[in-house]
Structure formats: structure tokens, C-alpha cells
Image (cartoon, rainbow, N blue to C red; front, side, top):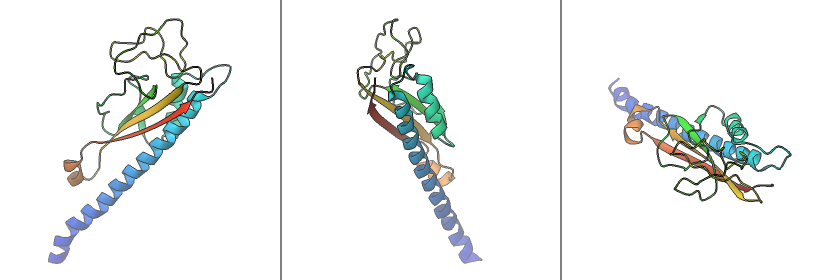
Length: 169
């Protein structure tokens, strides 16, 4: 009994640490799959160009068991951490500007651009992708471990996945 009492906490910590490590790998792979599928939706050429909502929907469909939101669809991609166990989707240029860009009201809402009047002062209004421009989809996810001991040392692990493709239009 004494030996088990000494070894049990270490054994449980090891088991739950392995479970948390597996969860991190699962979320990382899921996010990479989601950004690749989302950017594939964003770049396709069709009579009706895909919108930011189409790209976000594709990311959410392929991000199984991962909660995603979109506070500023076109960035800027901030260093702020999303809420616990949630992610943010960004549809931007590969090197998005750190300042807010002005957007003409005549531009369509193609991926990489947002409709005129949506800017609330904190989100960028980037020009929609066109002329085979590169387009980037980024997901930033705030992973919180379930093991209390590990949570003390690594409470928020930010996992970021991004994919860059050139548009077909």
C-alpha cells in the first residue's frame, strides 16, 4: 500500500500527461487540415466568388471537435489569446499590414477582403484577393490542458496553423 501511495501520483501524472500530449497533437493536425481545406475553398474560381463566410464554414466543417470563432475575419492577426479551448479564423494576405487599410465601397466581399462599413476601428479592411494574389487562412487556437499539475506550468498553449495558396481568379 505504501509503495502504491508513493507511485500512484506519478503514474497518474504520467498517464494524464500522455492524454494531454495526445490532445495537443490531435488539435494541431485538425487545425492544419481545416486551414488547408478552407484556403482551397477561398481560392477556387467560379462565377460566384467564395465569400469569407464560405471559407469560415469550410474551416468549421473540417475542424472536428474544435470550437472556432471569427472576431476579425481579415485581421490583423493579433497576439491576443483566444478564449480557453477556442480558436479564431483569419483570412488575410500572407503578410498582413499591422494597421487598418482603407477599403473602397465598390469592392466585392471576396476572401481576403471585407465589406465596406464593417470596420469597427480594430479590424482591418483588406482589399479582396484578385489577379492570382496569394491568400492566407490562419487559425489561432488556445489549448488548455486538462491535467491540473500541467495546467499550472502551461495554462495556455497557443497552437497556430496557416496555409497560403494563390487564388485562381
